[in-house]
Amino acid sequence: MKIAIMGAMPEEVAPILEKLGEYKTTQYANNKYYEATYKGVDLVIAYSKIGKVFSTLTATTMIEHFGCEKLLFSGVAGAISPSLKVGDLIIATKLSQHDLDITAFGHPFGYVPEGAVFVEADKDLISLGKKVALEMNKVVQEGVIATGDQFVANEERKNFIGSTFNADALEMEGASVAVVCDALSVPFFILRAISDAADMDASFSFDEFLETSAVESAEFVMKMVDKLVD
Ligand code: ADE
Image (cartoon, rainbow, N blue to C red; front, side, top):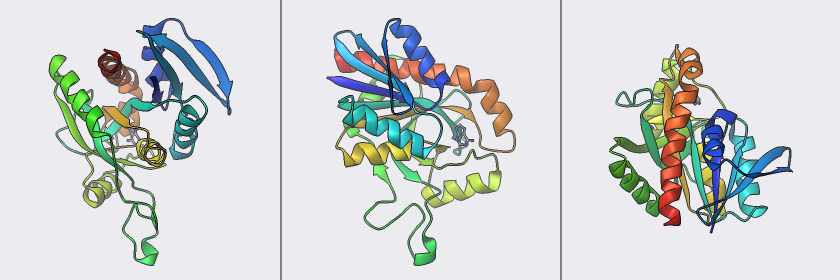
């Protein structure tokens, strides 16, 4: 089995590479891909760079070029749900693109013809995530994640996304990765640790908590890998 582990920023994959120690670096399509064998299983790790376009490219490359058969995403997110605080983990049940808008033609936000407003994450990986949470004695929330090419630092926009998509957290890559994995029939799991509340203090909070929250998420994802290789 070959497993992709993806983040968007260097800080999101650094804790994983640190844990692996040894890996091979391959340059492909303007990005670096790190290949390692971990407990007898092949891993491909990469950070895509921020946003839907780069994450689409990286997810597609990991599947089509490197042959990954499952994809785990680890990173940080802004909280919408008031129950999510900095450092808390959220597992995406389904994801939507909050900035996809052809409402002028009578379609709902997040929808284009032949697409879907939501893409559901793999149920078996979510169950595994819940098992890992229990074993780690961690409270991990499940919920809807909304994705867009915007760093949201504005209550009004955050509330719009929350009410339109019933979303609990927002970020900039999950839904595009979901669309790729769904189209290519690759089971995927999106995990995020909260770095900010997508409000007027979001950029400061993000800068302060990016690293620690990214570590929270990466440690959890590696525990998932441990379970997958068992
Ligand atoms: N990722 C982490 N925080 C975010 C925010 N406020 N907006 C978009 N993506 C994020």
